[in-house]
Image (cartoon, rainbow, N blue to C red; front, side, top):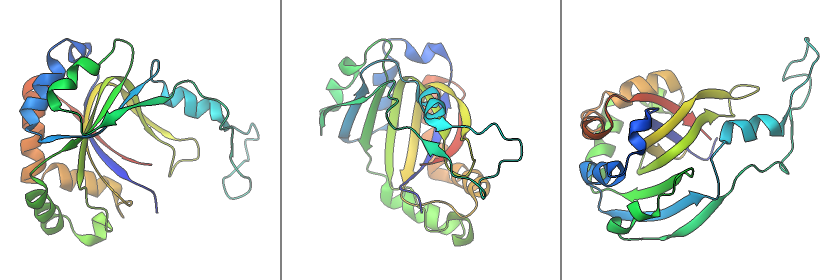
Amino acid sequence: MTMRTNVCFFTSSAEALRPGVLPAVLAAIGCDGTDLVLRTDREERGWEQFCRRISRPTDPGWTTSSKVIRVDDSIQLYEWENLGWSLPLADVPALARLGRCLQVDLLWSHWREADEQFRRLIPETVHGGCIPNSLGLRAGWHDLFECLGEPFGRFFGRASFTVYLWGHGTPADPDAFEQRLVATPCAVELRRRIEAVLGPTSTCVISE
C-alpha cells in the first residue's frame, strides 16, 4: 500500500507561468482556503534527482526478483521549504518565485458531492479503496513521475502547472481508475474550470 495517489490535470505550456495565471486558477476552482504551502529552494528536478539516486545495474539479465535496487538518499538536488499553514488565498500568488515550484494544498467545499460520485461511479474492483479526498496544485516547472510499479520509475512529463486530486492508497486498476475518475461529473467540471484558464490539459495517475 502506498501513501497516496494523485490524479493530475497538467499543462507543459510556458504560458501557464505568466503573472495572473495562479490567482485566476484559484478563483476558477472556487477553493475555500489553503492547508499547507510549500516552495522549492531552487529549480525542481524531481526526475533527475530520482534517477541519480537509483543504482542501475548493467547486467542485461538483471531482474527485480534477483537483485535489490539500491537507493542513495544523500543525493539532493532541491528541497521543499515550508511557507506556512492556512495562509489566506489572496497571499498565495505573491509566494511564487521564478525558477521555483510552489505547492499549495487547497480546501474545497465540494468533497461530499465528489466522494459520492467517486464511490458510485468507480467500482471497488477499480478504485481498490483509493478515493481522492484532497485537492492541490503546483505552479512552476516540475516533473511528474512515479517510482513505484516500474523498476526504474515512470516519467509522465515536465509540467508548468498541475492541479491534482489525491487520496490515500493505490487503485487496483490505475488505468481504469484514471479513465473513470476523470469522466465523473465533478472531475469534468473541475477540469473545465481549470482549462478555462490554462487551456487544454493532460492527465496522469501517480502513486507515491
